[in-house]
Picture 1 (cartoon, rainbow, N blue to C red):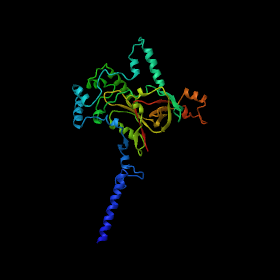
Picture 2: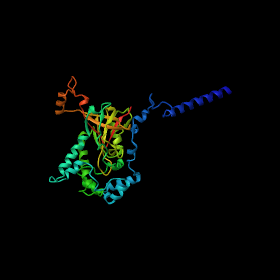
Picture 3: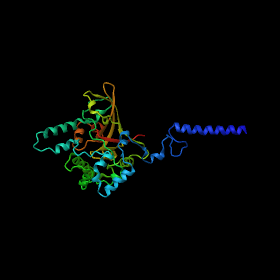
Picture 4: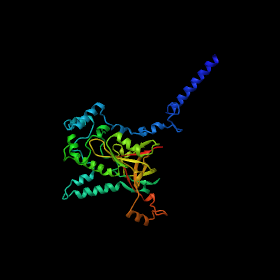
Amino acid sequence: MASSSTFAVVLVFMALGGVLAAEAAGRPSGTLGWNANGINTEDMSGLQRLSIPTWLMASDSPLDADRTSKYLDQVNDKTLGQHGKEFCQEAKLQCQADIAIVDPTLRISRSSLLDQELFQQTRDLVDASRAMQFERNAINKDSEIVLPQNLHDSYPTVSFLPQSLAEKMPFSSAKMPELLDSLNIAHDSNMAIMMSRTVGQCEAQEQGKDTRKCVTSLEGMKTFVGSSLPQDKRIAALERSSSLPGAGESRSKDSWKVLDAKLYDRAVVCRNSVFPYAVFECHDTSKTNMHIYQVEMQGRDGSRIHEVAACHENNSVHSITNSINGNTDQSGTISRAAEACHWVTDSLIWTPTN
């Protein structure tokens, strides 16, 4: 009898050891739903495989189910405008009408052709755009590169709406007056101008609906990103030092040494837009000539930063120039070194991580 009891105790400790080992590995006991690398294949089939950045999670809607239902009823019966101020406050939206215009092209478009400052504004815009551009070989390992002062995010971060509410908002050019009235935003205000630009760009993207989509909720972003990237991979957003507050102010004219430039063949880029609630223009780069690189650099003081570059294959006239300069291989294909690149700002770049 004693030997039987001892054997039972041994079995219990063996089972307990298996459970503890499994928990130490970060997975439940047993093998169902887990592969040889310890990855939960059940989670991989859903949206749990997306690793959402902390700051993006903070942009999730603060509205609970009851308040969402209340405002949804007001949208349906077209009385939201009577409660617009309360709605913007509770949902943490950006409904101020006369906020600063962050898109410089809109500032120029509002200027009179006789305005003496128009030429200078245009030149400043061109200079700022050129400062963000470079050739692919500029980020080769051990290269030295000077970063532009305007390498920082400019667009405000606002809260998403719950998906059920976002899908009911009158998000179209034809219904823009209705949307403005619902949020108590003046039709001739800076915010109205930027909202019209955002909606117009989103409507233009509908032509490429398989690879491009404007998302107006966190759930919508997760669904588009998850369906666009490989289903058996975990997904994370690439780190960008330029997304941190005060990033542009910390840039100096000193050069930075490139430590590594990692290429991502698959990526979904979601660019922030100016709107009272969060709207991102997302597109899958796998069917384009765009290549995404995460660049790690080191300053002279030893500090390290990460930035993301988008590089495009040169076409048409540029291909002739590159052929003359010898930037083609034996098949006539333009080499990666000949790609035109620019730094990415105000964007989330989603990539497979394993």
